[in-house]
Image (cartoon, rainbow, N blue to C red):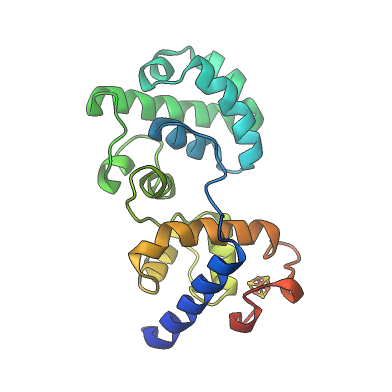
Amino acid sequence: MPRDLAPLRTRAGRIARALAKAYPDADCALDYTTPFELLIATILSAQCTDAKVNEVTATLFRRFGTPQALAEADPAEIEAIVRPTGFYRQKTKSIQSAALDIVERFGGKVPRSLEELVSLRGVARKTANVVLGNCFDVPGLAVDTHMKRVNRRLGLTAREDPVQIEEDLMSLLPPEEWTRYTHRVIHHGRVCCVARKPRCEACPLRKDCPA
Ligand code: SF4
C-alpha cells in the first residue's frame, strides 16, 4: 500500500528541525584531508567505530596516502595496518581494488558521481553518498546502522534494505537536508537513540516518535 506522504513529510520536517537544534555541529566523524582518504576511511568503517578507523588511517595515509601508493602496496603490509578495524583481509582487498580502479579508470582522481563511485570495486552506495555529501557538495543520504535503526524507530521507514530506506527518506526530505540529516541522525544514534536501551526520556525527538 502506498504511504501517505503528506503527514509523514510534515513530521520528517519537524524531526529534521529538532535534530538541527539539538546537534547543530554534528559532522562526519572520520578524519580525512582528501576525497580519496574519506573513501578509504568509509570502507574501513564497516563494523568498526570511527575512533578506531581514525587511529588506523593516521598510519595508513602517512604511508600510502595516494591511490597509486595504496594500489601498489604489498597487501600483507596493508592487512597488518588495517587489522584492528576487523574483516581486515576483505577490507584490504576492497581498498586496494578501489584504489586501482581510481588509478586505471579515473586518472588517479576520485570520481564525482554516484554511478561512477559505485562502479569502483569495493564501494557500496553508502560509501559513495558519504564521499559525495562531504567532499563534493552533492546531497546524499548514507544509510548505515544508525540511520536504519533511528529512522525505523521514528516511523519514517518500515523497510530493512538500506537502498529502500534511502528511497523512503529521499521522498520525505528535501535534497539540501540529506547530508546534514545523515550526520545528525548518526550522532543521535550514538548519543541518545542507542541500539540496546534508547534514552527516550531525554530525547529531543520524543514528541514525534511513535516508538
Ligand atoms: S524517543 Fe526513543 S526511540 Fe524515539 S528517537 Fe528518541 S531515543 Fe529513539
